[in-house]
Amino acid sequence: MQAAQLLKYDKKFQLVIRDVPTPTPNENEVLVKVKAAAVNPLDILVGTGSVKLIQNYSMPLIMGNELSGVITSVGKKVVDFKVGDEIYSRLPLDKIGAFAEYVAIDYHAIALKPTNLNFVQSAAVPLTGLTAYQVLNEELKAQPGQSIMIPGGSGSFGQMAIPIAKQMGLEIIVSGNARSKDSLIKMGVSQYFDYRKENYWETSKSVDYVIDTVGQSELNHELGIIKKNGKLLSLKMGPNKLFAKNRNYSSLKTLLFSVAGSGIDRKANRVGVEYHFIFVRSDGTQLKKITQIVEDEKIQPAIDPTSFKLADVNQALNLVNNGHPKGKVIIRF
Picture 1 (spheres, rainbow, N blue to C red):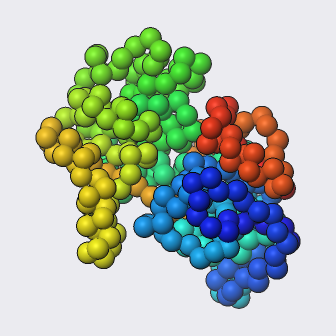
Picture 2 (picture 1 turned 180 degrees about the vertical axis):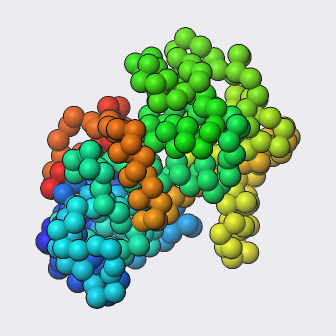
């Protein structure tokens, strides 16, 4: 089979298309014929070595973190799945490899794809869906009646986070582009700021939580609207001491993350806010719940119209890293 491999970490990495053996699933795995694989900013972080303190891979590495496809064989201990099932997955962190014609995946990391989505649309859901679910339920432990602000919430993350937050009984405030305002209000947003015309930090009331999708440039504004003892969680700003502590990392790793996140922690502590970072993991049980939300809410993830094949993987990565995609960038098999 063909696969896109990373040969070494490099700030200007290029993947290489190679013929490699088709994997043989172990007793807990299914073999999946890949139909579509999404390209994410996470793939850039993996390729450049930016997350090797969290997960350091052996080389050569088949890249790619999320996919949709069809099961072609199952291990003897696999339950609830059979040959022919149409599934999707955020692959286990220690065994990625979506940029390939076939992938062996632990069955605990997969779920049946939503019935209202095709393979291309389905491949756009697992990473953002699981991120939203784990942020709200595990990191923030949000409760009904509490308020949440998502700067940059008109993107793919907000599309999944908003319906999950709505089901949890949260008040949702978002800043984003003008074209998404009406659709996101219909999804359950109570207050929407067009970022080109309005500064949310000038008029927004104090909120319990902020989920940052923008990065350090927005930090001071975000901290300015969070209630004392509230929480800021970033998808962009990087890990800190709390991230390492919650994952029982070694004392050396904890020290390194403490140093890396010290600037953000100082600013957050100064205003009585706790800073969190997330590195989303695979979870088939949670993904099944996300499937139900996608079907119930009739969610249609935005897909960039550019059509990429596996041979075009470096162009797809470049679009994600340097371009302005109009939705998830997808490699079609």
